Image (cartoon, rainbow, N blue to C red; front, side, top):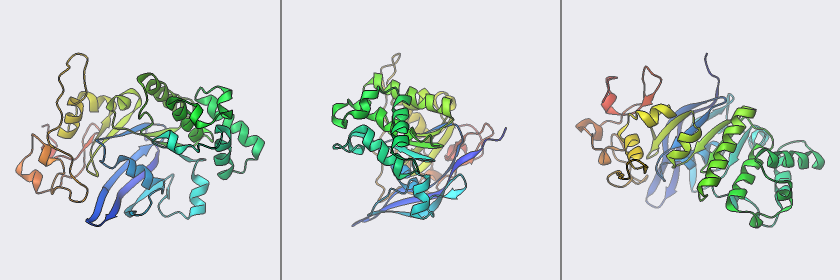
Length: 323
């Protein structure tokens, strides 16, 4: 059965002006997100994951700017909507879990006040209805009722992050973009927060884009995973395909760097990630790739769809064969 596309990204480019030229943080990415799935976006820090989320939500501020591209949400291009049109979609249809919940919450307002402000700003609900929606949002993520009357500094890091999740789901949106929702949390809170996101998808049909450099988080709850490197997408597959049979050498390098209980020896990827001010020619991973060929430094590989539904941008699979 054909799945419905809820978000379609087409050739998105997000640049930042510097005195040395444009830093091309996101440099031409295209992909679809299907309704009801949890899609992961993984890669090293600085590869452009969070920049994509901010661009899709129209949160990029100068010196950053969207050079080109389209982000279709339920058929409407978010990048061309007027502000009042975008305001109608935010929170109600399209929500955001920011990275660093303490910085996202207002330290001088109680949790209930912050949630009510957001709900009333993006809906026609009155104060009593907004208060109930806020309480329901906190209840959905397992927060006790007294949390509503507390200030952010009275909560632990994990509780603040769960409050952020509760705020983002208080109006039952269709799509949530979660940007590193487990950063800085202990393993118990990471597990609880991931389970909360999975439950929201299963119980309410909410589509989730999970942005994280932690591959364990993706393995836990994601249906499909996109691997991103140097502003480009390298590979896409189901979680099982990515973890059990990675195609791109970069994906293999990421997995080799993950500690294992059985094999405590890990291998980091050789070299350093390149600067967005001067991406390498050809395949952007070729300076660090152990399988590079002459063509890799000269020609940029295109994303190819394989028979099993996977996608990969690598010259090793130029003829559709296996590496």
